[in-house]
Amino acid sequence: MTAGAINARFQLDYGSFKLEADLSLPGSGISVLFGDSGSGKTSLLRCMAGLERPQRGFFGINGNVWQDSDKNLFVPTHRRSLGYVFQDANLFPHLNVSENLQFGLKRLAKQLGNGAILHPVIDLLGIAHLLERMPDRLSGGERQRVAIARALVLNPAILLMDEPLASLDLKRKQEVLPFLLKLQQEFNIPIVYVTHSRQEVMQLADFLVVLENGAVQASGSLPDMLTRLDLPLAQDKEAASVWQGKVTGYDNEFQLSNVEFNGVSLSLPNIEAAMDTRVRVQIHARDVSLTLEEPNQTSILNVLPAMITGLADDHSGHTFVRLACGQETLLAHITRKSAQLLGLHKGKPVFAQIKGTSLLH
Amino acid sequence: MLSPSDMATLWLTFKVASISTLLMLLLGTPLAWWLARTRSRWKGFCNALVAMPLVLPPTVLGFYLLILMGPNGVIGQLTGKLGLGTLPFTFSGLIVASVLYSMPFVVQPLQASFSAIGRQPLEAAATLRASPLDTFFSVVLPLAKPGFLTATILGFTHTVGEFGVVLMVGGNIPGVTRVVSVQIYNHVEALEYPQAHWLAGGLLVFSFTVLLILYSVLKTQPSSQPFK
Image (cartoon, rainbow over all chains, first blue to last red; front, side, top):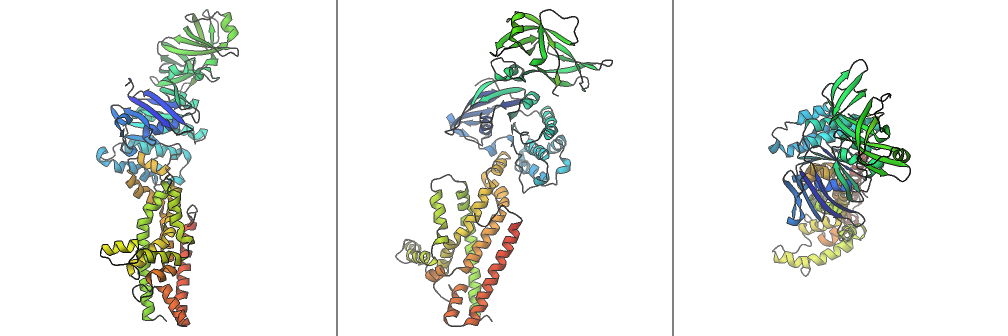
């Protein structure tokens, strides 16, 4: 068994569709299963939940084994300590919000006592005013929040979420996303989250699994995966690195925040976060340019000494450069001509000029 | 007006229809559930078998039941060995025949409403710790309520209206197997038209009223039609 706290190995064969996955996920944080439709990400999630029963499979979480086909072990879904959020909420239409929330609690009453986390969950997801409503009287965003709450109140060992935002428009997405982040901070439940949206990956993922045609293409921590030059993520037009840091200072005169990352810090405008807040910042590869000497007269605020750790060509005039800045990894997209003019190669020290960043949260 | 023997046939009819409907719901629910969920290759076979009474002349079904349940039939020999005697021309035989004859009117609406529920609510229930049996009672039954209403009413009214099977299997024994439809036949045979009118008209009004109520209730739930 590998080091991760969640181990999943599945072989599923539906004739026209095959899934073959062997994965280790960290036992905490948000692991995102990312891929196009048909990549097998939802099937993988359903295997974890026991909603699909693959011919061969193993699933263990923090020491509990829920499936081991070698030992003919298969714990049915209803005996697994999990929460599952479906793409379209899937609330019981004959029960109101409160009864939907109580559905699982009633069946777990013995283990949970008096449902101690019901009220914190209702508060967290902001659904206290909806308790008497029937599901068909809720908006899409409200429905999804209730569905998340319904899964969460059981205080499960793992929370499985199948594209919970996919059926929502942009506004509703923005309404639910903050709850997902808060959820991760306030309840320390590992989350496996399925999505095909880059934006959700950037905002939510701690650990990323890329799936393609029913197989795991790569997996690793988000910062690593985003800057791996052999993966399409780093070669996309929207390619970016994600850094997580802490607000350590604020310059009133220029309205700039100082944010401390691993061995490197940035001055960032427009951050409405208090001191010591943890923030996640996205730096697009196209917003990073490279110079060989430290520029002393430039409008660009953040110029960082960096070391080239990788180079790749896209055969259409672009070069992707991976850089080490402190202990962070940065991605730059430049033209192949510039790369040649500067004589870039692995191990070369350069200066990275960061033209812009965006705050993810 | 209604004679004492008319009243007896009415009471008997009500008894037969109630008991048959109850039995059909008990047997038809698991059968409809299985038909709605299975991918077995026997599904088509079973569907066809259940639907047979819809297309067969009742006399055909009654004829074969008579033979099967008779002293030389498979069922007859079995009931004989069990010390139950033979079923034709008894109240129990009438119930057996009624159940078989009206079964599609119970199974089909149930099957349709079970299929309409789909697997989604069942999966949600499983992820919320409900066992399959628990799910059936706490999710499937409430969601299939219109299907059960339709099945109950159609099963009951169809049993009330049966004639051919009753005559073949039950015969015409007052107080035992003589139900309303047979009594109407007797009245007509005896040229007692006023008495026939009372019963026939009553049955007409009864059937129409019940169906009117059923369709009015179901109108508010467009997804659940009595027939697929």
